[in-house]
Image 1 (cartoon, rainbow, N blue to C red):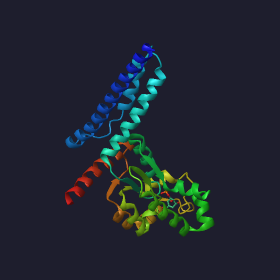
Image 2 (cartoon, helix red, strand yellow):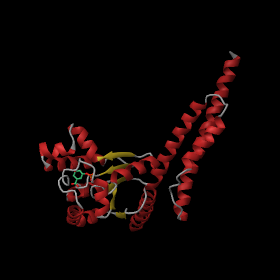
Image 3 (cartoon, helix red, strand yellow):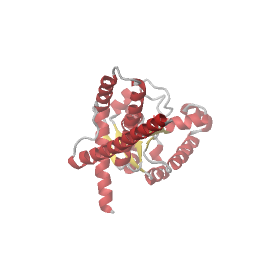
Image 4 (cartoon, rainbow, N blue to C red):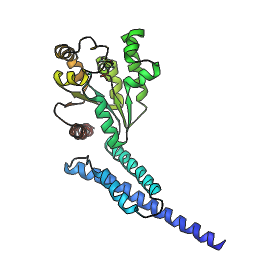
Length: 266
Ligand code: S3P
């Protein structure tokens, strides 16, 4: 019995060490974000995660329960991403832009570096309706789809730290923009019609361009939408010729500038 008591105490000591180490680690993660922010250092450091994984693999070689230890570190790493996101953004990130502007791609990348949830609006609406976007347009009409978009945006206001990837037409309704801004920063991703064409030419789930997939038509529709898109945006990012990392870093830095201006306005 005495032995069990001392083992239990030893375990409690271990928990304390782990807890204190974790609290300290989380604090360091936050301090690093603040330091980078204050000194204009890029927030995203690709490669760090892989480095940690590599180090862990080496350190756990020949030790007991390596998989379990690695598992815990995976979770620590994911939580650190969340802590960074919470430190940086106290709101939802709403991505708008023309079809093929990169909203889904950038959402996925942002989500992978900040462990933020993604709401892919088209996908959620399609899932809820049990049919593709093209079928919704055909069966119920565009108006029905647009109403579903508005309702989803209202639903998302109770969230925080979520990436909302809008459909290309979402910001065309003024009331949608009002709803987006209630709890989110609106980022417009822009690209040239030629770039858009290259990205959409092989897909078949965009009823508005399905029968006119060519650069002049895309350019015309983009032009019709330009004013509304620009007016809706808190931040505009030109994506041509940039990779995902560059776009996301620009997005983060622009948000930091935007937020500090908002704070100054008080
Ligand atoms: C639309 C864009 C599509 C989809 C629907 C209508 C539009 O979304 O919502 O086909 O009006 O621009 P993506 O921008 O994700 O392709």
